[in-house]
Image 1 (cartoon, rainbow, N blue to C red):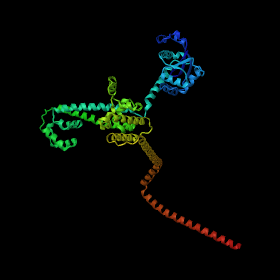
Image 2 (image 1 turned 180 degrees about the vertical axis):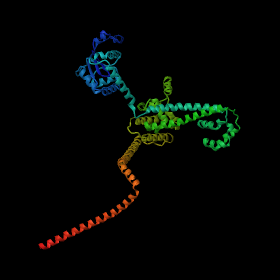
Image 3 (image 1 turned 120 degrees about the vertical axis):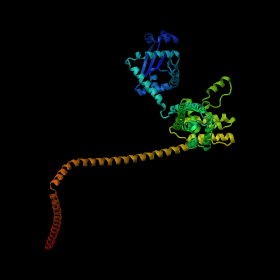
Image 4 (image 1 turned 60 degrees about the horizontal axis):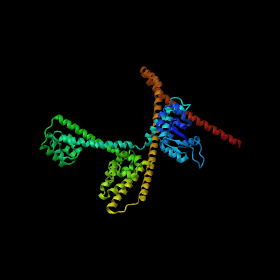
Length: 542
């Protein structure tokens, strides 16, 4: 039986025919030892057909399909044209060797071509990969390396950018940092309590909160200097006047030792660091909440931002979480207990990370397992909606949360919950209404933007006109400047004559007006005379 080998290179698909395998050996070890020798390997494996890719984008699409175990139309046409045709009702006298068994099974299902994938075939294809540039005649040295480098970069870039809008990696990093900050803040708070208790041991019993304790340690510093003048500051920090007075009384009768100014400065600086860490932790939590609202709004609305982020980080990504069945999601985070129970044949765990949800804490002891199973089911639905839906909305998460609340009431009081179909219909209606509102808001925003653009254009045009007028005035100024200079010189030389001339100009102006009036009168007289002559001619004609 003839053996064909399919090799997917960076430049195209290659089909090789392996014949006379006895020369290099039948077992895997013999083939592995003889692969490096081109003289022996070239006699056994020969190029049957080669189909180059049209472009780099085509190469990327083909490799993406091959990596997912899918056969493209181009690969199918290449195999059907290059391989021998099999008559109907008869077995093929050849087989196709492939590296990945997934794509082999897909090729066999679609084209009925028998495929095999084993160590022997893998070693033969390894030899093909090693000597591939020798089999292709028109391939220049260095072209294959360039094609492999470019395809590798584009393939990796496409894998990294596969989920651009779902920035679940930011959520994973944020929840890891949040857990680390919680541990660090607790450790540092215990350290400052222990350190400052040497000076003021009574403060530990009065103030239990770590953040408030660090604030008070920074505010009080030396307990001997604490007086009623600082009572207002204590009330602002604690928010309780009775506690502030209790701190004052405890400072007066404190049994702690005195600390040097250098020690107090170090305690103050350390308390400031703890306060900054606590404040940064609050900001990080707000950042995580906003990110979860963008990436997984329904999951966050159902189970909370922190628990939802822990589920995403434990699964690896939102896509992986969406692919998990609800039974797997139920015990995420309890893998050790699960395998221990399977090993010892004991009871398997009922819940993992979802135990931190408030729903399981509110359920009774006998209903915790049932509640965990139901909650995992709803979390699986919410994660799939968040991952694969085009528009982000919290309507489904809110409705799923209502369902979980109704299930709690059903377990406790026996109140029958609503059906899942009715709830999903209501969620879809609310989502559609929200989408319509969003479209209206977008249209209004676009109209306002257009009006603003028009106003800005009008303002720009008016500014341009003002600039042109100013430029024209500026151009006219230097021409009139010479005349002004001449006038000033004439006025300086003959001030008295100018006055007389002004008087004459005024008289001339009146004379000109009189002349104009006289001309108008003369014109009226001429018109009247012409009309009289016309009347006389008419009478004589009659």
